[in-house]
Structure formats: structure tokens, C-alpha cells
Amino acid sequence: MARDSVARIEEHVHLRLTGRVRDLRLVVVDGSLVLRGRAQTYYAKQLAQHAVMEMSDLPIRDNQIEVP
Image (cartoon, rainbow, N blue to C red; front, side, top):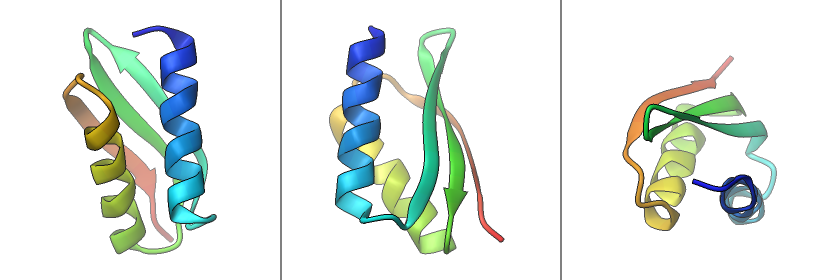
């Protein structure tokens, strides 16, 4: 997956969740995605994962978004 595609997905999630997930980064590992960042709630973490799934053909390997 090209870096511009990853950046486009990160921007989409950022706009869709209006700040509920901060510092979102998608990392491609062996043909799958790892989500990293910080979310205000577990629900926001889940929303971010679903937004990424809608935009990417790659499977999600791990959701490492931290919730306080």
C-alpha cells in the first residue's frame, strides 16, 4: 500500500471522528495494517477501526489505539 493511500485513510478517519482519535498512524506490516494512536473512548477506537476497514483492502492485524 502506497504511503499516499495510508495518508488518505488517516485523514478520512481524522475528519470522520472529529478529534476523538489523536495521532492516528497506520503501519503496514506483512500486507496487513496496525492502527496506532490515542482515543478518548473504546467506542471511538472501534469507530476508527471500522472506518479504516471501509477504506482499505488490507486486513487489520492489530488495533493498538490506546484508551486512557
